[in-house]
Length: 509
Image (cartoon, rainbow, N blue to C red; front, side, top):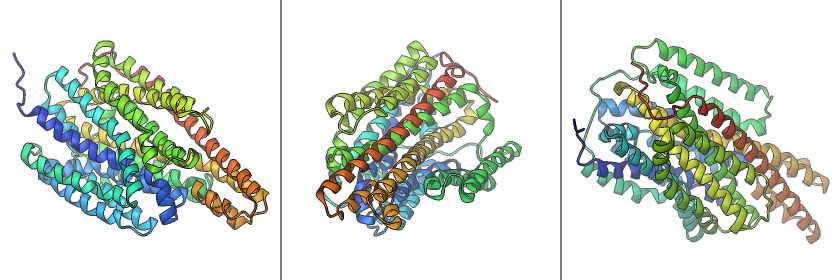
């Protein structure tokens, strides 16, 4: 019996790809602007991390709520409302005059984004009923995601070079306008046939658990990892998430059906996606600053230098889905995680003056190949392991793991970097007679340290101190890379034993 196929399915995929592009570009476009933001807004390392994560954190925390509202009120209606407010808060971010205002605007953008495309994977999964077409759709969807990761810094670099930092946020408005028109013309209105109440208790517990975890990780280097506040936040996070799971198990209409994690393919697939984005976003957070602050590239040049990643991702991601069909999900995904680990170890050994056309390009290409092998097959494993009534929850978890993985990547890798860079920089300034206050201020960011060097009266001392600061930066970068590589390799080994060798039906009723 021939499977009925939606005649508009490829146009619908185009809208979903535009949705992914918008969300991912806004995750990465700001990275190349970090040096400019540090200078214009006097942002510290911690504030730079929050400027990046303030968008991802509420997006991850509220995706489940966004999915629930779209199922109840209508997916297109909620999507269009989210797009409108996303554009509005982008304008607020563009005209921010302080780090606090920008972080607030980025937070509101993340909230709006959580209501823009909460059902994207659910729509894709139900639209493409043929397994081979679905694999192709996941491949194209993932290719757009990977390309947006690199085109974000390129676009941001161009805008920063020719305009002011606010332009990286204003660029969202024309993309939103295109998405609104295409949304209206192509996507039909739809709702879930089963109407459920919104789980406010689950929403509160999940948001508290995730927010306190990321806050503790980002602020750990400045507060102290063993301080009462940091340990208290870690404890609050663990307690909130444990209660969240127990609470959701007892509800007849949970915000998240946590029983889906009992399916090995689902958990392994979600873990693979989270780890891939964890490693990737940690890498981008470091490499864009390395290009500008160590190599001396302009913002535009830094973005262009990430182009090898985009090109490789566009080519390999669709092939990753087909390779999984031929060789199996287990080998393809675990192999991708090990390749990403190799790339991070390689980057963790490079010098500040390593040739770009050589080690640096090869590192980015290796990273992109690994990421591309994970994205589509893991998504297919997650969505293919669920029953029809669990597709909505699976879609939400898939998106949450992406955003949460990227958020933790910036938070953890950035905190590891700060934990190394800060003490080394303070020690360097103290050794030349700088006061405790000046040394502490210089250690808050690479830009602050370089700014402090300009006030040293003797040129030979300035050259020597710049060398010490560069060494501190590279030491922090190397340590962050090794941490990401270890996590990627560990997850790669774990998922090898839990992902199915081939895509198979393993559904929970």
